[in-house]
Amino acid sequence: MDLNMDLNAPHSMGTTIIGVTYNGGVVLGADSRTSTGMYVANRASDKITQLTDNVYVCRSGSAADSQLVSDYVRYFLHQHTIQLGQPATVKVAANLIRLLSYSNKNMLETGLIVGGWDKYEGGKIYGIPLGGTLIEQPFAIGGSGSSYLYGFFDQAWKEGMTKDEAEQLVVKAVSLAIARDGASGGVVRTVVINSEGVTRNFYPGDKLQLWHEELEPQNSLLDILNSPSPEPMNI
Amino acid sequence: MNFMASKQPENSLLGPEADSQRTLYPNVTGTSVVALKYKDGILMAADMGGSYGSTLRYKNVERMKAIGKHSLLGASGEISDFQEILRYLDDLILYDNMWDDGNSLGPKEVHNYLTRLMYNRRNKFNPLWNSLVLGGIKNGEKYLGTVSMIGVNFEDDHVATGFGNHLARPILRQEWHENLSFEDGVRLLEKCMRVLLYRDRSAINKLQIAKITEEGMTISQPYSLKTYWEFSAFENPTQGAVGSW
Image 1 (cartoon, chains in turn yellow, cyan):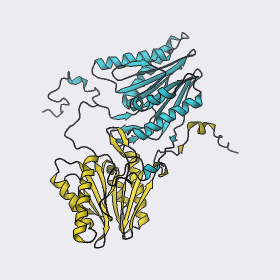
Image 2 (cartoon, one colour):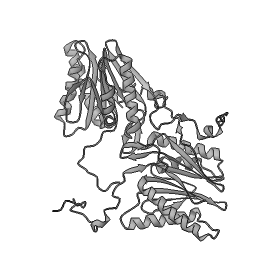
Image 3 (cartoon, each protein chain N blue to C red):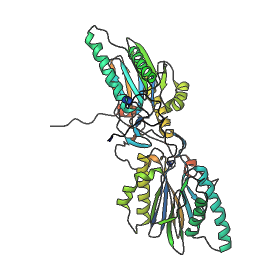
Image 4 (tube, rainbow over the protein chains, first blue to last red):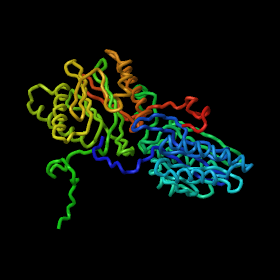
């Protein structure tokens, strides 16, 4: 509606995606909102996609672009696994993503976080933002919702967390981003990857902690109006 | 030496720099307002969000206000413009009271005033960036109307602004009927607000419902709605199609 839109400004990516390492593997997390403009096209999307048995990727930005890149990389990794004779490493998966993102940088609009576990390096997280930079990090945040989490992670991130601490941190962070970013919402999905395998978790919107100025959900106003008044004070 | 930077772009079609006050784009915005006529008067619902672009910045904004004795105004769009409209209406009601003639402005008159206000600003290319819902009841006659930022106005049994037009009106067209009870009206509005919460990016889960009847206006305390996420398809959406959304 604004007549003064800067058509050359970078497109802000809807979504909140996170990947953190802990002392045995990685935890990936994401919200579930896909929007077209201001309309929520899908309120329960799955943004954490499998590449191999032990490597997953969090996707943000254009749905089409991120899907195509993942599909190609899944295909390449499948062939690579057959040739190698053993599971692909997280580093290889991340580099394949980088190859596609970098060489098509003028046409693609997708930011990805690759996370997984392999026997050589353990749990690893790689961030691959717009442009195709590859950066290995102890934790990575991405998407439009991540703007609200830089301060939070500066304070809350610690090296050597346990699996449960890491997962709770991810759920808390995505939930905080959902509270403030209009482009993020819905449920929080997490994927935990370690030497034992992969676990998917699902945290529906109404089960998340309440933040500032948020209220306990009710069935209806009528329940509030019909509830008994509080006890008067006794002097 | 000219230290003052000019605010005007070079290829501007605008008039003198004196009108650097015009609204070019909204900054802090409110989303949908939904309202319907029921047995005793009007019910109106709006959430308490003030968005700053895509950031959900303010979560305690009251977007519905009583006007005089007989009317209720709900607004979506730029909050500062809504506050300016409330100032205009304060003056209007004050002068009406000063007459002290036993007559008071009803909802139909206030709606007409707002229409003129919005349309005249539009003609000067300096709109008040709001969509307004004006409801009320006077001498037993219920009234519910709406005015947009370009001055389009009409009345109906149920109205909505913004996304409410696309998501709430269809529900209301199916389920609204004459002489709804208060409980049914509230439930119907909550149904609409829940859909807006699921599908409107700028909606927040904190709303108020206001009621205006012959007795006067009441506005509920802020509260949140329960939402449903437990469909099995939601828990595992990519079961049949690995790699999809």
